Length: 137
Length: 137
Length: 137
Image (tube, rainbow over all chains, first blue to last red; front, side, top):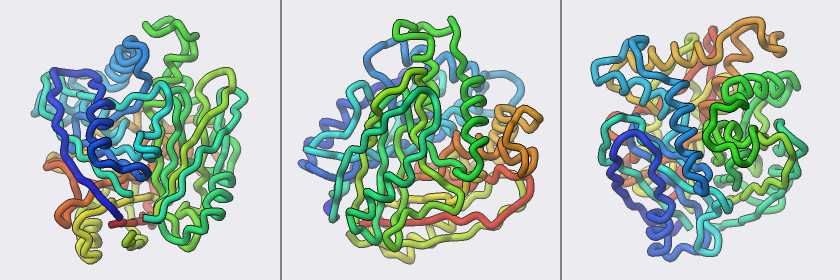
């Protein structure tokens, strides 16, 4: 299999969704792969990957509010030494998962019209988040 | 890598789980791949993929009810222009994810005895849902 | 593509997270793959796979409590013939998903510093859980 590997780093500035579709698209173009499989893997346990609609900016805001209410901060957690937002961040990252696999066709990601790829930062403070990319052809 | 790509379209008729295991199995058979990796990718942000038990028809019904209660319709969402079921659909699709990767062994999907693959439609009205398939060997 | 397939069996002893990072790492080493893609697939609908922090033992305990509260046992489920913990187990397995894909680089899994791979058993009683592994290079 023809393979290319890379790690891209994204600096997040606090809780939120950061679209990385263009970064991945640019990297993929440089590999010159026409048909293959792209694997995206987030190397963190308090941030993760998401594919959702990238047309309306209200969608990420609603997602943030929904997930914040589903796994709220508070004194209910045993694991609290790293701050009140740490254990909720692990729950959120567990629910959404760290990995995505996408076909590549005609040199492009096989995303639907409205799909964008996001890093979802779950911690209050930002961080440098490393995302491993692999394409095989 | 030997590769085959396709897009299958499934017409959903409203919110619910639609089993597509047989469709994928038939497509895989035509590729004549004996050992490899199958990637399944749903190109939508208000429908997704799921693997769950395909023996008891009550299981999909309970899943529907549970997820409907977890992300209910209502006036809590900022993104409401596309109807009251749209933002809940994005939440549900985000939780379940658009992608699945499965080994192929002996020409068959490496599914467990009780596992079936489903398209989960989250919108009230049905739609033509496109699922990209890639097998590499 | 150079490929190796295996099924590893893990005996779980009731609801909980069982780390399998070392088992997978050992298997990967034997394949002698330096660069490639690892796919891990759990062949069950009431257990699944998870990547989360493997430093603090309180993290898996908080995850267990959170998920137990999100999909509690009770008389709300139509599918109850296999015990009160069965339908909650299907919900949990659906949320977390059965599949993971990870790049392999330099003969090692591209995991982050704090990431461990777990089998998450959702049934009260333990079981022999089969996890399919595939590496392609």
